[in-house]
Length: 96
Image 1: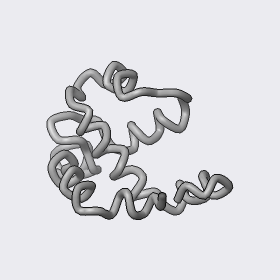
Image 2: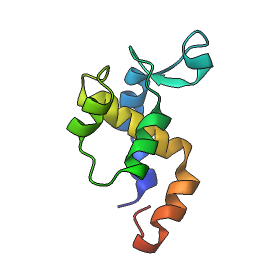
Image 3: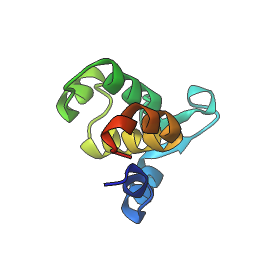
Image 4: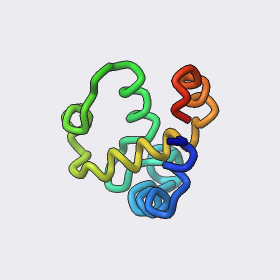
């Protein structure tokens, strides 16, 4: 599959639109998962640093996340924002 296709389809856009906000009064305007102070970068970094993380593990690490959709939206946003980095990271496996 192509990573670009996964994050650029209608369902992914709707999920990100529903759960990701940018508000100048929260986290200095950085993208944040709605209802929390957790950023998509937080989710992306934890997945890069720790191997074999599950949705449950991420939700335990960030207790303010109470829906798997929040984690998924955060991850999709992180990948979309950092697509060139992700492409380089996974280039040898042709995941992008």
